Image 1: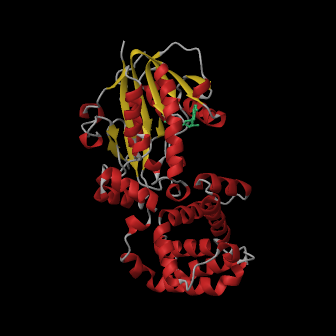
Image 2: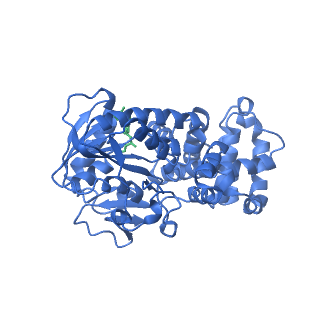
Image 3: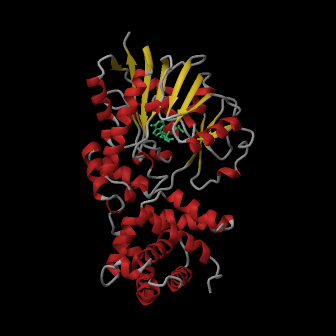
Length: 431
Ligand SMILES: C[S@@+](CC[C@H](N)C(=O)[O-])C[C@H]1O[C@@H](n2cnc3c(N)ncnc32)[C@H](O)[C@@H]1O
């Protein structure tokens, strides 16, 4: 029974969903742990990823649907993985176009293999059969943007950007992100790609990186268009010393190096730093690499250019990490903002007189972005903001805030597939 086609993929997806929803692990971590313990053929691994990630992307909608069809709430301590089986089964039916007999049968097999959920097979069958029959009609009447955004994020985005914009952001999160490739200067691009400014080539969502030419030749790296913008704010850096803080996996380091800078890249996590080193090696680029916690790193001459890409809640990358809304909370935003504030002060100390400091985060939360910078400027009067001008970012003036900072949103460049949410401010130290 357990060798039926798709069973192993569905089981991997189910385990990953349970780890994400119950232990609040990132989906990539959960899936890679599961798949390295029990490897699957590429196609099955892709199916497992599709089930888990689409279930999380549409979690609010699927949960509401199941609550409508199930006679009473499903208690996990009694029902085991019943809820996850229902969520994944409904996702297959409504978002992955799996034929109903295959999705329902797959769910039944998962239930049979779970010592608690096996007692709920009747319920699983009944609910999924109703989802197959009536689910699409209910889905059409749902407020997808609102349901797929938990209250804590919805309220923040309405406060920060207004409800119409919060809705546009949330709707973008329902879509898969495109694959953006940042080419080295002489890279000619891909015929199937859309050319974005700044040597970025946009490919369809779901394009497999391994399927693209030029990876082993080190002609390009993967980097969302929005993530290419903060390092541009340093301006002309050819031949200059640049300090790249919180550098791994190194997308921005690579951009700084291809712009001709002499880069010192600092990163706390040794495994991530190794990944950065491997990426640079593949690209034929070289930087001075430092493995250290920025707060403990001492004894350097200040740098004329400093980039701090601070750790953050990463709510600007929900399209790529659909589990984030469900595993993070407002407390994570507060924690990340406090850590980034400490790092920003150290980065400021490492900035030379008249030097430029660019602070960036891939977060949509004002505490981690504009409010962080307001507090910094109030306590560090030797710094002033240098507003971003549209010409520096290819004329895209919609990406500049009233204060003159870079503020990209997932709903920007919507016609071309959107972009990650980044905030960046450029600060200059006085003499
Ligand atoms: C947003 S990621 C950086 C992405 C990178 N700049 C890029 O473009 O590929 C933040 C990084 O900060 C690192 N980090 C977090 N706290 C740190 C600290 N105290 N000192 C140095 N690095 C730190 C994390 O390990 C993580 O790799």
